[in-house]
Image (cartoon, rainbow, N blue to C red; front, side, top):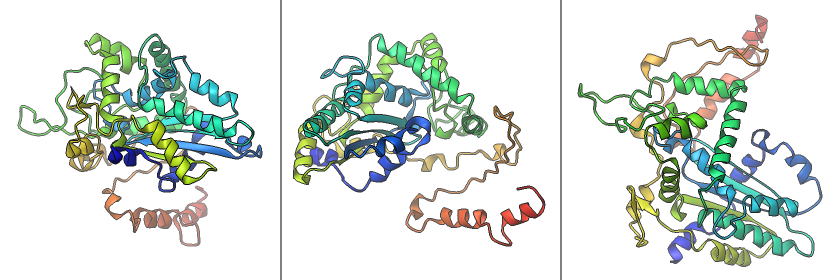
Amino acid sequence: SNEHLNSIAASYQSTWDEITAASNDGDDDDDDDEEDDDGLRKAATALLVNVGSYHDPPYLQGLAHFLEHMLFLGTESYPVENAYDAFLSKCGGDDNAYTDMEHTLYHYCIPQDGSSGEKTVWKALEMFSAFFKCPLLGGEMAERELNAVESEFELNKKDDECRLSQVMSATCGMDENAPIMGKKYEKEGDESGSGEKKPFHPFAKFAWGNMNSLKTEPESNGVNVMEELRQFYHAHYYARNMRLVVLAGYELDEIQRRVVQHFRDVPANPRILNGEANSNGSNDSENSLNATITNLHPYKLPFHPTSLAKLYRILPVRHHHTLTLTWQIPSVSPHHRSKPADYLAHLIGHEASGSILAALKERGWA
């Protein structure tokens, strides 16, 4: 229907900042500056899915990240492993993806100059679109990709920022009814035998995932990891839950025609609702739109009062000393236009006479 085509059609400006941020995010794109200076015009595409590590099942933490990895390993249209990466590399393009707490972003760029530029641009878009229509999600590739996730985990263990982040998650005091492992858990918000609700916040989850959280312990508890992976994909990867941006040096009508051509088969609604197949293409708008909304309001603040007013000392990997002070404040999302947190950041980070920094410098502490 036109409704779900419009849901996935390119929004050429509103989320371009996601592409820019991703291109400059971390060490995954260290070579971007050099590649952007090669004089070639490039076309670029980014697709954001409104699902992230906050949506991981408590008994399969890291699942959203694992799924991000799996989408690159082949589709029904292009079943050869890593065919998409090989094509982009051959054409001088590059790609990447990341899983955040509330969303997952996939993006790529490819040169559009030269005699075959236009042909390769649309070929890349076709191959990319298959991620969201017909990924393979199985086979021996899954075991190898689990090893890749494990390798990332081992690297993160040596990163002081990542270690600090995980310590904060592990000590926030909001994981009582959401153990990292074990499918026998009380659902979020369920009442305990005492009649009191146990505290929980998705911030307490283990977002990275590793071999232990995605294979060893789930399988020992009878969890079919690959079946859970497919259900997660079917429940969250649908057009109403995505935002697509396409940037290319062609007429907008042509870009839209190509987007419709390649993304028309992405289902408008979840393939699975409440664990059951939604094979009839039901347009239950309320259910589909609410299926993946990250509503953190019921969870309230992420740090339980018993976890505050504490000092944690963390042994660093690198030889350095850092002091990190953390306050939790109410969500500023309702005030996104006035940005009150930016005012606080400006006042605290002010460096002129009379500022916090000036006082620290006077004491030789900064």
